[in-house]
Amino acid sequence: MDLNSKEGINKFLNENFSDLLTGINESYGPILMEELIRRIKFTIEEFNEEMSSVFVQLKDKEDKRQKMYMMIKDGNIPSQKESDQDISKDWEKEIDEIES
Image 1 (cartoon, rainbow, N blue to C red):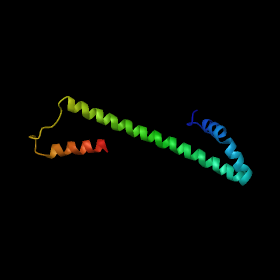
Image 2 (cartoon, rainbow, N blue to C red):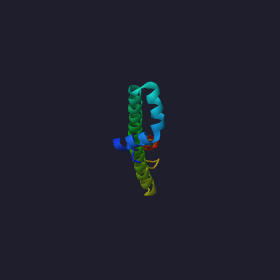
Image 3 (cartoon, helix red, strand yellow):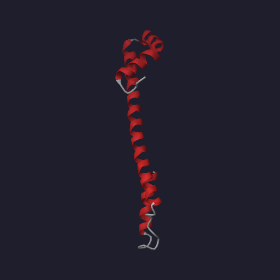
Image 4 (spheres, helix red, strand yellow):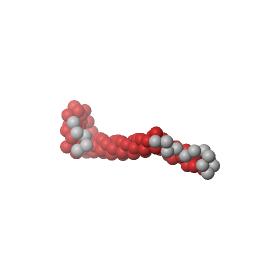
């Protein structure tokens, strides 16, 4: 079932909540039932958007980790003897940024 499209969301709601919605419709009327359906649709759409955003961020962080790993693997690590601790601190900041 495709919950990324409006048709898929409507089909999901109709199939899974038909008994529940019938009871709500009989008890509270069609206006409240429509509001409930609208809020459920909004919640599903918002969740899908948030998950898409999270996966994009996760992929970006993994790409940065892989890049850092390849740099370390290739021996591209600044030595402590080079221009004191500043380079080391820059690397620490970059690693902290990638890990956060």
